[in-house]
Image (cartoon, rainbow, N blue to C red):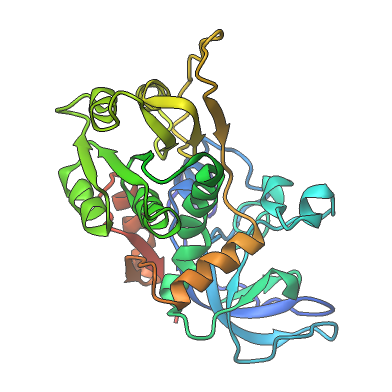
Length: 335
Ligand SMILES: [Zn+2]
């Protein structure tokens, strides 16, 4: 990335030198994320310097290890946890490094994986990927991880026979449906979107009820299929004014709304209600949650849909992504 608002350029850069706990990873796959579009167009202005290498969904093989590295050797397939930090605090101590400082994350504040090689500051950010398809594994580090954390936040509030509403059935929402099916198999899933194609994928993945909110009121529908109780859990993968209002209105007693989408909407939260509805956000995932996601993938329980692209197709792929035209995830294969 050479500046805000400019197309990406392909440039030769030196291969990083490795020492101490650092590991040089040969990138086999790096997922193109919608967040990159906000970074490239400057709507989030936190790139530390130009030129800068983006890419925070990374998987590859170990190419070189520093003298203080243990547990990994050249040739090992690995997944890179991306919520890096520079300074330990109580959130890093619990493995929730994504809650520390976004400006330390790989591909956002530190050189990322849209490259042939990535310097990872410590082997502690690597997870073994033996038995995993590395293209799928790259997608799991963000598009697969973020909905997993959101779903786990709902677990204490869901019970057999209750209903969960998944709002927005794109890449993340499709994982949301899969996690609900796996972690809470006796909970009814209502999938909501404005796109019939995405809804039919959600149905294939296990949604019990699908609602096109262009033609049908999702709040009424959820009330109708829950005997007027409302949903017990809602995940809003869009985060716009309209979806937040719908998610909030369809919540039942002691339900929880988890907001993941970055559309920047505002929720009007009315005080004095007696239903004890909780609202929270959910940010990326912890390193232990990523290991759980990888376990599900190793068992063949989750599917990631990916399309491989080369360096020369990056700018066009980002344009397609911005226009909502990418099915599943576009993933850079540098080799
Ligand atoms: Zn991302």
